[in-house]
Image 1 (tube, rainbow, N blue to C red):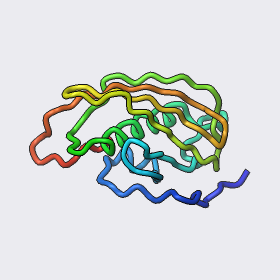
Image 2 (image 1 turned 180 degrees about the vertical axis):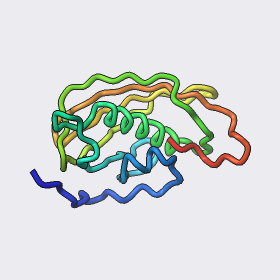
Image 3 (image 1 turned 45 degrees about the vertical axis):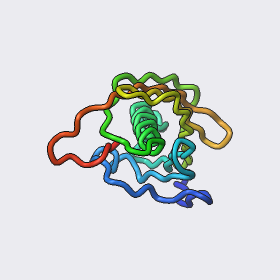
Length: 148
């Protein structure tokens, strides 16, 4: 099966200062704004496990990153945050060329902790559900904005 390359209408490349790890995961795309934003990516050969399916660790990294990115986008004055807890349940698989959309539901953003859930979709097929808890941290000296 060949790799699809087109980007669905309404999505644009996510431009932000991400960590080298997140940059190696993508490119990532975004549609919408704030807490309603959808984060997406095209599955590539580099994302495959030995069975020819998208690696579960990669999908969890995508979920973690999307949760953090949308939490940041949902706040007027976001500060640095780190993942405290991340859980996920795999429902189905993604394959090379699949367009994976991460739909995030921000539950609560408090003074210290933030809570959010997400589901990863390939078309009308849900492949993963995940939830995360994030903690605000003091910025390191010279540190920029939260990187997801």
